[in-house]
Amino acid sequence: MAKRLYRSVQQKMLGGVCAGLAEHFDLDISLVRLIFVGVAMLTAILPMVLFYLIAWLVIPAQPKE
Image 1 (cartoon, helix red, strand yellow):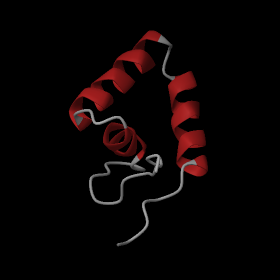
Image 2 (cartoon, one colour):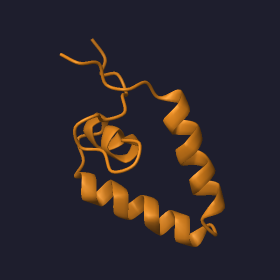
Image 3 (cartoon, rainbow, N blue to C red):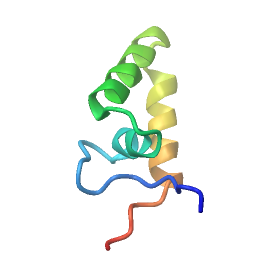
């Protein structure tokens, strides 16, 4: 069965989007957060903030086990 993308509930800082992406792609959470901040700085911050807010609304929270 394919892995589903969820926002992380345990390792979140704001909404859990970066932590959820890191878990889904088996990457280090710090690396995903650094990439997010780097891309945000290169794109004048606003597009990445909009992406994060939309992802926060669209990606479901991780179900409790």
